[in-house]
Length: 327
Image 1 (cartoon, helix red, strand yellow):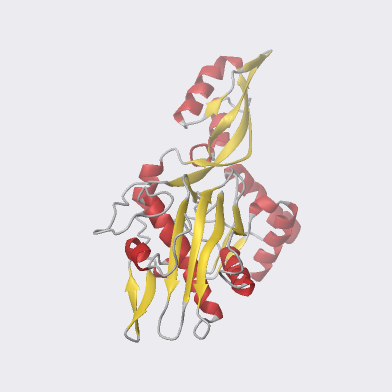
Image 2 (cartoon, helix red, strand yellow):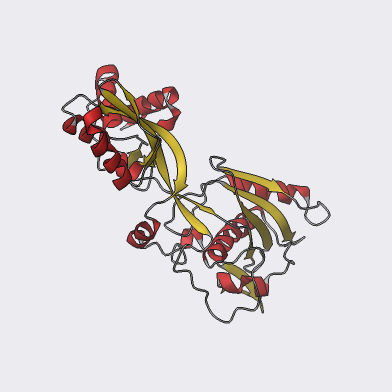
C-alpha cells in the first residue's frame, strides 16, 4: 500500500487534479479521475513506471455543497468550566473560489488571539454540507461576533463553537432562512428540500468530433445527458461539437463514441468546474444523509445552567445565544 500511494503522490505532483487522498477510516486510497479512459492510463502508468499492478474499485461522483443566500450561524459551547460563542456569516462565493475566510470583528469585542484561533478553525478541516454530507465550496465564512470567558475559555472551546456555528448556519439555510434567523421558533423548521443550500456536481468541458452523418445521434446523446453545446461546426466529412455536461452522465461516453462511430470519432474532456446538480433531488434522497445524526458535525450547541451543560437544538440556538447577532 505504501508503494502505491507513493507512486500516486508522484503522479499527483505532475497532475494536481488527481487529488490523491488516504482515507484512514476505510484503509483506502481515493483518487479523482476524469473517466474510464484516464483510469486505464493511470493503471498503465503505474505498471510501466513503477512496476505496480493496481486495480480500482467502482468509482463515485464527488459532490460539493454551497449556499445561495447569506446566513449568520451561531455556535455556543459551554459545558461546565468551558465557554465559547462564535457567530459566522456564511455567504455565497464566486464559482471556483473554494472556501474563503475573514474576520469583520473588532478586537474590542474579541481579543485578536481568539479571532486568529477561530480563523484557523475555519480552515483546518473540510467542512461538510447538510444535504448529503459533501464538502463545502464556493462559500465565504466571516467571523462577525464572538465571546470568550476570562477564566473558563480554553483553546478547544472555540473549535467546538466554530464548527457548530457553521453547521447551525447551514441548517438555517436549508430551512430557507436568510440573514438572521427569526426568534422564537416553536417547532423544528422543515428541512426536507434544498432551501438556500445547493448540491453541486462536477462538469466536463468536452469536444466531440464525429462523422457528419452521425451528428444527430451525438446531439441527442448530449441532450439526454443534460448537457449543453454550441452550434456544431462541419469540417469536411466530420462535425465538431463543443459544450459542457455533468460528469455523472458523460464519464463513460468516450467508449460509446468509439462504438457508434466504429472508431472514427474522437472525444476529449477537461474538468469544467462545479455547477448545480442536474438531478439533486434524486441524489439527496438516495444519500439519505441526516445532518442531525452526524454527531461529528453537529449543528446543535451546549449551554450551561445550574452547574451543568445541556444541549440546545440548532433551531433554538438564536433564542439562547449570549451575543447579539451582527445582521
